[in-house]
View (tube, helix red, strand yellow):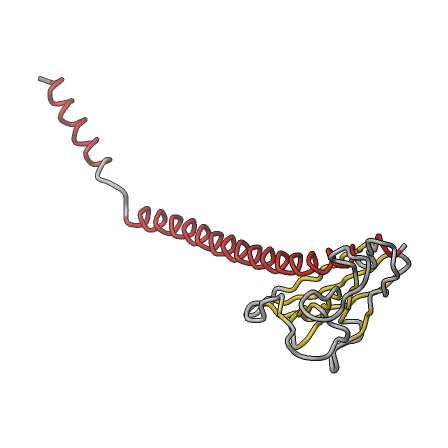
Length: 199
């Protein structure tokens, strides 16, 4: 019988000890859980902001690289003539009211007929200029002024803050500054272009 009484007493002691967590223990556990959740949510917000900024930067650099690639392609062809005729050097100028050296007109024998055609739709001169925050291009052009130039950057999303063409001995330096509209993301791109036919 004693063993039965001891067993009952032992059960009572166990039941008193296993009545659950105290209120203070629960509050501490909830506080620690909240701190962990707050830290995790802040980390998530920071990572998301970093991801968005990176995407904007990549988009801006891709837009600039696309525009510079187009200009670079024509600068590499500058001076080409199928039969060795004399082609004018690329002309660096500016649209009125824009920064100096922000326009370039490039000449080359596109149809390989041995002469320079500058008139009409088959013109073999190619212009690129900065105007009102956008890069523009026009074919069969002889000056940086005028209208009917086509935009090659999307001014709704990107503002061209600077464009500069610098001629050096046998090569050109293209500099392009961009800003993504609606954000503080900026990019500056520089390309060195070897003018192979002008050497």
